[in-house]
Every structure is written in structure tokens, then in C-alpha cells.
Length: 224
Image (cartoon, rainbow, N blue to C red; front, side):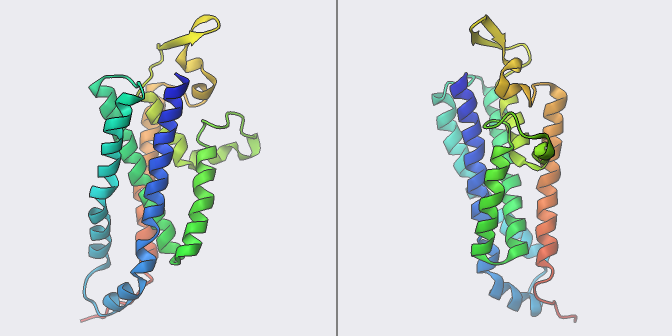
């Protein structure tokens, strides 16, 4: 069980980091071209923004699919198609949210080194508040976990493998998985899973909206 919990958290952390750092580079690299082409009215910002996101999707979702299709069965996770699909959808949502965060950071900062530095601070903080490494966060900063993408993703990937009635071997014989210290604080109830998914969908849209609004300041489209 300990190995399974660890691999689930590693999967979510690894792919969120990959998506975040890949997303912070395009806008600064294309800044000069974007300024020139927007100012000349060659295309709408919405067209550029949508093509950028859609064009990255095959790589953003393709690699996690291949990775999970191999690692899931090797790690001894539940050998069930429904659980596998649940886990994969959770990872997909994680990747898209992290990509949105990277786009927002990139669009706001518009400088590669600064954006990388900011992302390097945000990502480890989000991971530490996710609930796996530290279950005793001081109360004065405990509220920060509700802004952590990993807190919600961890909730979903754990829920993809365990239910409220599942047990595991312990010193007392069999103990409820829901009472395990690493899982207890996030819980396994359906309402919590729905809340986590809803929070991630809000972040998915919100981060992209912030990125789009930040890009609006670049270039001025000429009126016909």
C-alpha cells in the first residue's frame, strides 16, 4: 500500500511539473513575433491562444498516456479497467491544470528566467501542501492547501484506487485505508472527490483566462 500511495503521488507530481515547465517557454520565445503580428492585425488573439493550446495537447496528453499504460500495471495498482481510466483522467486533468498555470505565469512575466524561477517556487510549495509529505501543516498556513493543485489531484488519484471500506494489513490485523495518516486528511468520500474535481476545473479555466487577459496587453490590433 505504501508503495502504491507513493507511486500515485509521484505520477501526479512528475506530470504536473513537466506540463508546468513546458508551458512557460512559448510566450516569451514568441513575444517579438506576437507583438509584430498583433499590431498589424494579422489574426485575433483568441485564434493564436487557442491554436497554441490545441497544438500542444497531443504531446501534453500523449506522453502521460504511454507512461501510465506501462507504469500502472507494473506498480501493482488495481488491475481494473475502470480504476485505470479513473486514474488516467485524473492525470489528464492534472496536466491540463498545470499547463494552464504555466501559461498564466508565462503570459504575466514574459521573461524565461523569471518565469522559471517563479514556477520553481510555486511547484514545490504546491507539492509540500498536497498532503503526502506533510500531514501536520501549521494552522496559520494550512489554508494555503486549498490553492494547491496537488492537494486536489492527490485527492482524485487516491480515490481512483481506494474506497471507504477498503482495508490494509497493519499491527492490529486489518485497518481501514481511510484511517491511514497519509490518506485521512484528504478523505475518500464521494463529496470530497466531486469538490476536488470541481476545484480543478475552475483552476483549468481560471488559469487560462488569466493568461489570455495578460496577453491582451501585447500589441495593439489596428482598426480597419
